[in-house]
Image 1: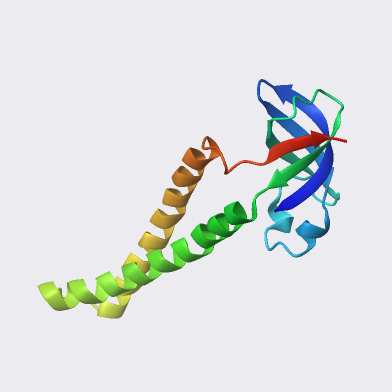
Image 2: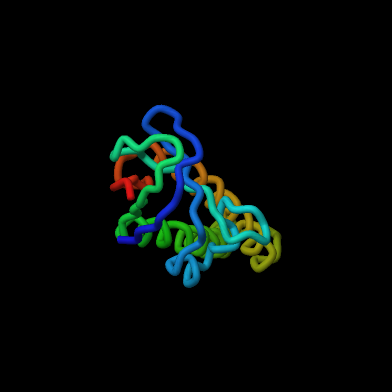
Length: 144
C-alpha cells in the first residue's frame, strides 16, 4: 500500500482533490512525468474518496492499494502489447487463409497498428468504468 500526505484544496460530495508533493513512491514510478501536476513543479493533484470526512484545508493521508497499482500496470503495459501481437498474427493468418493479393508483412503491420490503437481506446473506456468502482480509487484514510 502506498500512502501520501497532502492538503485538501477542493471538496465535491464524497470526492476530494488533494494537493500533494511528489513523494518517494513517485520517484520510481514510470508515469511520474504524466501525473496531474504542473510541469516543472514537485506537486500533483490527487482525486480521492473522502472516507475520513475531511474538510477543505485539512492535511490528510491518502492511500492507494498495491494490488490496484499492479492491476493497473498490468493492463496499461500488457494490453497494448497483446493488441499489437494479435493484429500482426491476424494479418498473417488472413493473407494465408483468404489468399489476399497483398504483402503479408504490410497487412500485419497495418492490423498490428490498428489493434494497438483500438487497445488504447479500450483501456481508456475500461479505465473510466474502473474510476467508479470501489477499490480502484485513492482513499483518504485519516486527517493529520
